[in-house]
Length: 363
Image (tube, rainbow, N blue to C red; front, side):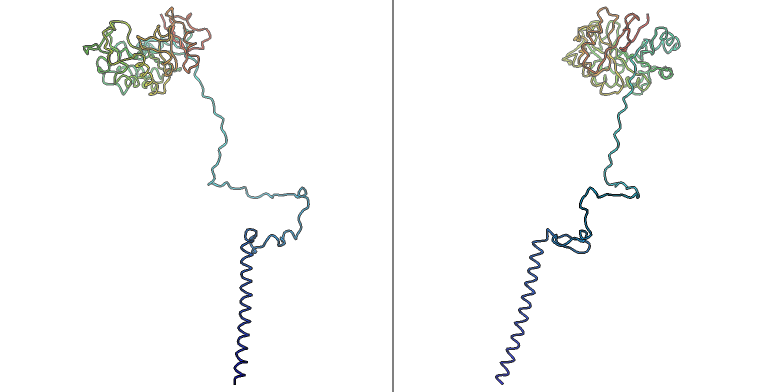
């Protein structure tokens, strides 16, 4: 009984030992495989048929590779054109800018607005006889009413003939220039915008020798009213608005004007010019005083040529004044975007080449 027991016990032990050995071998193989995969994972090549390692033979290589790549020819057969990806940004073809057409210099014949309204054919005939190609028309009546429809002007600021005037301007073949008396106005600062008029120390509206009122360039309504008039000229079809009397008055009892709120006349007028320039896209011209044209500065009138040149397209010199020499102004404005214009009383005063904007007044 004892021998049988010992024999049976030894058989079971050997069987368990074999199982352990087999398990150890399997475990060792798993560890070796895991170690190989860990160390060679960066070199493994994955394909649709599984993965392989670089030391295994590539089936493509078994078919043979060309020894000389220069003998290898690539042929692409025609197919459907590629459809661009709408998600990728497309670069438009470069388009060369077309230079903007520039208008020829103004060669205008001066005419009073009321005279033009009364006899437009006569004004055109005089223009042609003088060899001019366009008109420069004043846009205020003798009593300072505006001849261009201006919805922004208060009651009484616009002439009843404004629409008729605008219709006649629109019928012209060549766009005219507008002559706009700016700060000298006996209607608006005297009756409509009294708070924006130049005044005496007593508070009364100051009047010049012809008993005409003037706008204060720093007045609260001055810039808005001028911009409304300029905008009306642009809407009526004028190619350029030329401001006259854009200065402080220098004739009359100017010592009576109260300048206590204005520390610098040139600074005040320049600030107004800046407001006008920034408030419109219309081409702006300015008729300079004789002193400003000669010396580039008229402190009494408030005109500083080099400051004003920043805000006007054309600065005009009245060459009917014996001292009015455009050469001085041309030299000063040489490096600016502002150009010189001529205001003449006779054809002999006009430049022969016609290169400058010019206005010719009749006798």
